Amino acid sequence: MEIPMELLTFSIAVITSALSIAYYMGYKGRPKNALIQGFTAVIGGLISLISLFLPWLTIGESELPGFILGNFFVYILNNQFVTMISFFLIFFAFLITFAGFLLILGYNLAKGIIRTTSTLSIIFTVIIVLCISLVPSDYLTAPLSLTPVPWVCLFGAVVGIISTKLEK
Picture 1 (tube, rainbow, N blue to C red):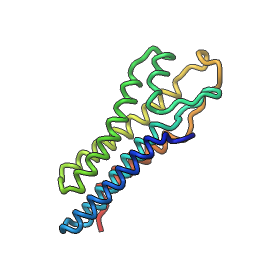
Picture 2: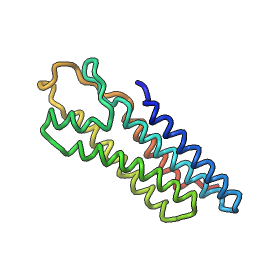
Picture 3: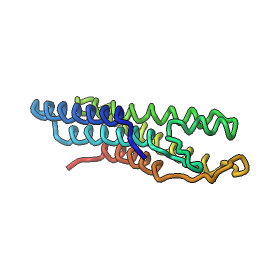
Picture 4: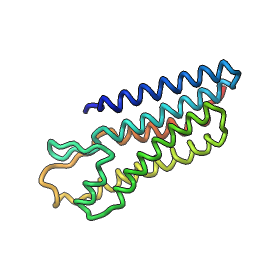
């Protein structure tokens, strides 16, 4: 299980940008609660995004990352539904991160965006895990096992929800 270097570089750049903007906005007098909430949402979105590039399923020796799961379901179940859900999870991860930046900048609408997209991310991740459990073993030549990475995606979404409630 290895994180691609491009994704790691992107994540470090986003975290550094969020910290820099939060520091600057704190210097300008923005309340610290909003800055901490926004930065925590950025971290939650990045956790969800990174988890989509890690293997969610192993089939024998093969590993399937979260964003490729849809192709697997098209092949096995002749169903495009999970493909759409996989792409929505990527969209929600980016949206949580973007809304975190908006919250750092002082837009209160961002709290609603973070709450909604984090909740939808949780629901969609659970749907994918349930769909994995419905795969008939007759179609597979090797054993199928779910890795713990979907729980990391859920954790990132929960961090997004929690971020909107962080106050002293």
